[in-house]
Amino acid sequence: MTRDPARSVRWRVIAVGAILPGAIVIVAALAMLSWLPELPDPVATHWGPGGVDGFGPAWPLMLLPLGIVVIVSGLALGTAWESAVDGAIGWSHKFLLVIGVWLSCFIGVGVAGSLVDQRGLAEAADAPDPGRWLGIGGAAGLVLAAAAWFVLPKARALDDEGVEPEPLEVSASERVFWSRGTRFGWGVLTLIGVVLLVVLGVTTVAAATADGSARFAVAAIAVVIAVVIVAVLATGWWWVTVDWRGLIVRSLIGWPRISIPLDGIRSVRTVRVNPSEFGGWGWRWTPGRRSGIIMRAGEAIEVVRTDGRQFTVTVDDAGTGSAALAGLLARTDQRGA
Amino acid sequence: MLIRIDPASGIPLFEQLAGSIRASAIAGTIAPGERLPSARELAVSLDVNVHTVLHAYRLLRDEGLIELRPGRGAIVTGLPVGGYAALNAAVDEVIREARSSGIPPAALAALIREAYQ
Image: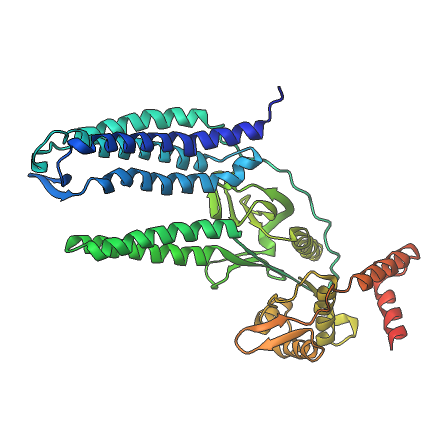
């Protein structure tokens, strides 16, 4: 039998990202469904310092773990998938995936536990506090998440040597300009959009039913969503420019703006990057003094600054951009010599 | 999109700039619908007067290659269906021939300009 390492990575990511958390919450939902005839109606849904202070129907509790885990594990799976197909995932992918496992156990056991103690009760007000179930779920989740961490492949940074560009021949009086846009792929944008829509939908429903202090929480969530939208707009679409000033990477809305002057650049290469090297998409920093604007997998311009820090930006036609930058650098060096 | 202009070449800067953008459009490195940098940005990048860039943009607009929209900048428009594949192939051929004969870029450009006029 031939072993395909990328295929094994894919299967392990699916097992940890979908099968395990999915199985836990489905079992929890089925268990709760089987207890339905024995449960009081309504059931206790919230506990305060003085005992039960919230009541409601049982069915939303059965769907709650499913909904939360679909969102969290879906997000983890979505971000890790492109890298998993390439056969290597980064540490942040692993972290998100095992968070999904932990959460499924914590919420599945916690919510199901709050109901298991209510079987046979005539009055939901007598329901015991489910704190211990949350504790059991959280602890079991930690064990499962730790096991899942080792089931996943080792986090790997794909090291790519890259190619030195053939510098553009630039005469002493010549002016050179290269520019190109770079943005998130439609897949990533769709994923972000879907997650935002789901959160927005939940918030709207919550706002319609909330009162008092709950309204404040809903408003806080709405603010978070607005911040996320602005952050995506500001860091999801960039213009990359090479000219006499050096390398300039500017967000579509003008800010943030990363500017690396020619005399601050030691070398430039064209590389192929995988987002997992940077722990995902967006404006990323990694240990080892590397940072980058990572919009997708594939070709990128990478510069090493005079202080040793590296900066990488994924952009189409990176070869031409690197060649232009290398040409300008070579001319600066000649003038300095 | 790569733009190269040289104030020492003797050809007016706006013409060089228009020529460089035209070449990018014909070679297919800028596509219809793509937005060109704003005149102000490009003027800073190329260290030329903003009127030089606007002059070049108006020239390209009059040729039907770009559209100038107030507030939205310059947008690449008029490329024929299928682009200029035959022309690009012919240009590659000419460059190959010039290389093998040791003719420098400036001399080849001058040859073409004279023959075309």
